[in-house]
Length: 263
Length: 129
Image (cartoon, rainbow over all chains, first blue to last red):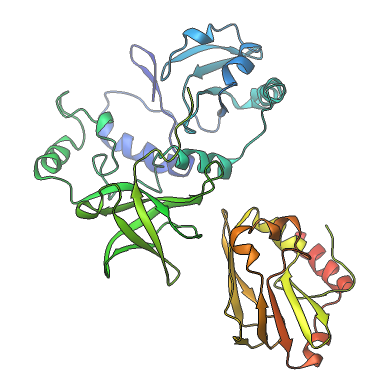
């Protein structure tokens, strides 16, 4: 979520959940604000990686070194109006650039040309998904849904219980007080196989959780996943197994992120 | 995309190379390309027997999981253990180092009923449209 002005916000939601998110917001907004779904008018391009600042510098007048992580600025990129933010979902330094849909092709071409001079490549959703998993970042719709809470997902840092009323505060405060029964943890498999969404996680003959995401990490070469497991089995180093289509593959709970970028 | 003339093919995108009364089996260039980077291949035990069309293993890429089907009936005499550590061979050399199992063929007639390279090429062209 970007705050573009005193009372003006821009939300980037999971593309697959847009309609549900808009409906959810509208159901609670009570005339205190107006929501416009501009998805069809806008395009989001992400330039990610350690060289992204150097590459983007050639296309914008923005003072990029002073654009701090998690801040955004309205400016121009390749001559087109754009909201540039220093963020992304790859675990690397990088930028997300919101432009009008009509100018997306031209901005893409300019970004690709600038990036290719720094060994940049086009990357699709599957590549992005391996990166966010290596970084241990949970994905909405996969690792979080209407049945999970931010506390269980390890996102307590984004829900400040002491900052006044918000939707779900009572439930979260109650969960925080009573303690979590399950937690989202990182798993590293000891044998080849990809833990996929919905696969069971076991400990000593008892199912203790479910996988929500998994991949082979291209950077580490290991098989990794995220899973909700019972708090008693969530400690780092806990030996578990993942039921991969009937095959019990040994795994161990590991700290997230799986991979941390060099700074 | 390559489909060597000396191989036989299935509509499930396995290939078979007859060598005497044995046959090597793997997946085609088309299949490996569709799967993307192969990260894991689950293969049967030596001595296992499979009917024609029966699943003998699993190939897994980051994108998806897919069953492997025996092109003909047979008994497994060898499996490519190298794939355990180097599954990427399926992508890099699908008809060579990326082979999966060796079978003793029970019925040669089943081999003759498989697609030849020309027929498989036509089949793949249809899949793409």
